[in-house]
Amino acid sequence: MNPADMFTQVGSVIASVMFAWAMFKQYCPYSVQEYFDKYSKRAFTFVYPYIQISFNEFTGDRFMRSEAYSAIENYLGSRSSTQAKRLKADVVKNSQSVVLSMDDYEEVGDEFQGVKLRWASGKHISKTQSVSFYPVTDEKKYYKLTFHKRHRQLILGDYLNHVLKEGNEIKVRNRQRKLYTNSGSYWRHVVFQHPASFETLAMEAERKQEIVDDLVIFSTAEDFYARIGRAWKRGYLLFGPPGTGKSTMIAAMANLLNYDIYDLELTAVKDNTELRKLLMETTTRSIIVIEDIDCSLDLTGQRKKKKEEEGERDEKDPKPKLPKEEDSKQSQVTLSGILNFVDGLWSACRGERLIVFTTNFVEKLDPALIRKGRMDKHIELSYCSFEAFQVLAKNYLRLESHHLFARIQELLGETKMTPAEVAEHLMPKTITGDAKVCLESLIGALEKAKEDAILKAEEEAKEKEKESARLKAEEEAKEKEKEKAKAEEEAKEKDSSAAENAKKQVKENGFCDNGNGELNNKENKQEGFSH
Ligand SMILES: Nc1ncnc2c1ncn2[C@@H]1O[C@H](COP(=O)(O)OP(=O)(O)OP(=O)(O)O)[C@@H](O)[C@H]1O
Ligand SMILES: [Mg+2]
Image 1 (tube, rainbow, N blue to C red):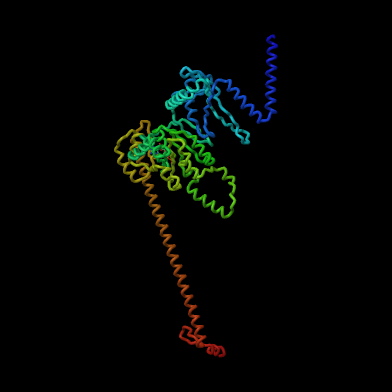
Image 2: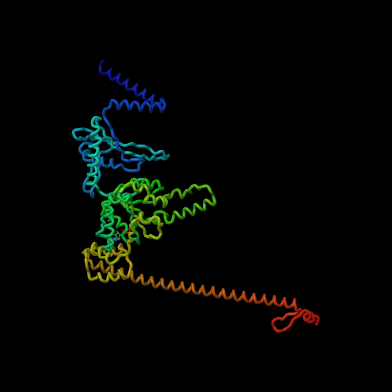
């Protein structure tokens, strides 16, 4: 047979097989196809001598990013850079080095104790069922390891342990902290590069040390938490007026402990289920932050309000109402959802985490939200004290002492100014960076603040005086009114009792005393008329 005939025959055989396969797919019932699939795969594995293991990026229903997956990703990094043709690049360690990993659908080889194996990357793409012009696709990435079945013992034992250990070590070496924020139900991140530290934080030294100790003790207390049967997490509530360093302190905490930050925007979370999903996707060694918790949602006493509303509804209409259109657009995260997020069973699933709430109005929050056990440590950040000012002066002006400090100390004792405002005055004002100019600017501002405060206090006192005078006048007027009404009442009573008496006398004696010492009787009156 010449080659041309052979190609023609092979071509026609392939075409027939494909036609038969298409017919099979088209007309064969689904159950038979499934049956066929199952047994063909079994037959294939019987003759195929290799074992395949998949490591998916997410475990469960997209709940958690698998730690094995990220360890493998790191482990394969160096091998990918020498073998794969398509690579993905990422920058780590303060933008100083590039880390490479293999792109999707690439393959790299590895060798362990003389055994050869292969790693491949891939992804499953599924379209969501929603009706939309722009259907959302859901990607599920995975790594697939392939090796000969005679090495099963070695690969499943020593090799995989070696991959996980080395991958985690690389991860720690390359670790750059991330700042995550939620967009819908997923976290997005940027590299976290905030320079704040506890050394630069303006605060009384003793309080600062107490917080640092608390954080360090927490981060090294894994065994302690396990022993006492508590989830390894701790809640911090930072409260105080705007510009007193709450956000700065969170950055300092992350820098101290080398943690990632998850900045949770509650208003973007659809409901409690989505909130739980976000919680499950956070990693260990992280700080979950909810800033301005009092403004995020109407959580203040929501439980109470809801109960009251439900009570009212039950009375009027026993059937539950559907949410109104505007309600359904808003976040449906409830206070109990937040409480569970902070302290429920799910919150214990990822160890070593801090949960930090910040607020300007601590008194507005539901006590259940900030009770000990949920928010273990309450830290008040307040107006700038002289000690805090000294830290700022050291940071901004490199000054330990100055003859103007005494005046500043005096003024700070008499007036309120936030560290943010003080810091603004300490920013360089001249090209030469003259410290005196900055200190004088601060003194000027403090003096003005003091004058304003005095004026305000005077105005308030006047206002108070006016108000109390107004109240007193109102009270007096009311008192007079009452007295008048009483007098009128008494006069009426007197009149009616006099009339009553007169009637009685007339009935009994036929005449009465008219009160003027004259006697009146029917006859006299009648006589008078007849005259
Ligand atoms: N205690 C502080 N130590 C050092 N710097 C501070 C301190 N407080 C405020 N600052 C400075 O003021 C700026 C604002 O502070 P920050 O954002 O931390 O305030 P905040 O308490 O979070 O305010 P808000 O309640 O409005 O969110 C920061 O950039 C920081 O430089
Ligand atoms: Mg803030």
